[in-house]
Length: 306
Image 1 (cartoon, rainbow, N blue to C red):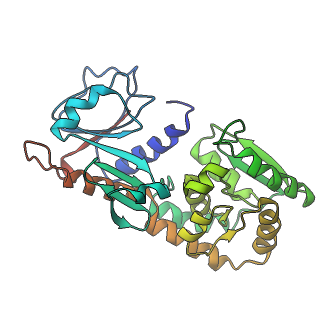
Image 2 (image 1 turned 135 degrees about the vertical axis):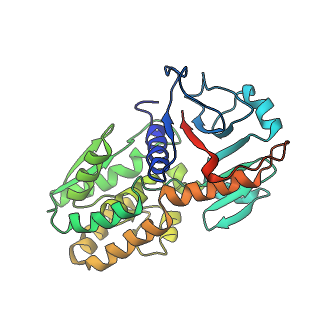
Image 3 (image 1 turned 180 degrees about the vertical axis):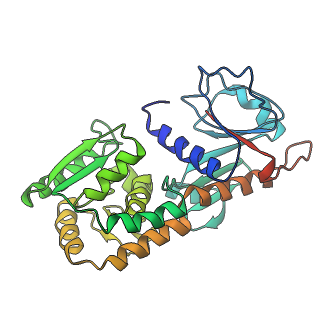
């Protein structure tokens, strides 16, 4: 999935599992599996990159937007769980709440949770030291999708923010396909780094990974999403009017006590890294008993990301 937005999600899973000491492999449809021992592996995959995924009854599968019937036998055996991103709609079903934004549906074997920052906790602590000596530029870097054209568009929400930036003499840059290191550098030198959602995401309560990343990199949280605002206990800058949001954010950041930012970074460090997401995910997998009553433990898994 090179270049697709889900690549960065899988990259974050990959590096965090590696950080935890798991034997991790990044596989795609061009991978040679001849010399890879896949027994008792956990596969994490997405429906646009699973054409040639090996189907084995000794493995477990975490499927995101995978609708192929090829998994039906594995589903019957209890070897499959489904991963979906949190939106408000998940609360309408027969779900159990495990934390404020994580829900599980044992019947459909689905876990709903937000994405997270791609940093691990000690890296967030290190960011605090780096941002002390990183001067801000009259720039705003948007690293990610800027899209117009259908109900998932975010351009119409970003445009007023961009025009307001011009009034302050701040240049707006839209970039994609940045390395993680370059993404961090651009966010850290930005005068403001918003996490603006489109109308659909705003209505549905979708929480973009950008808010977790930007704060963990050392930028104040700025959003037009009420859901995101409430997730951060109303300690970030929020306004649904993105033109006003820009003016308010720049004014607030100019006089903000750095301690406020550090507290937000700590909040992400403690609650919204992929360490947290993996804990929830593996705990859920352990709750779903395959028909042979095998219950895996965390240390028995290799992790395959496809």
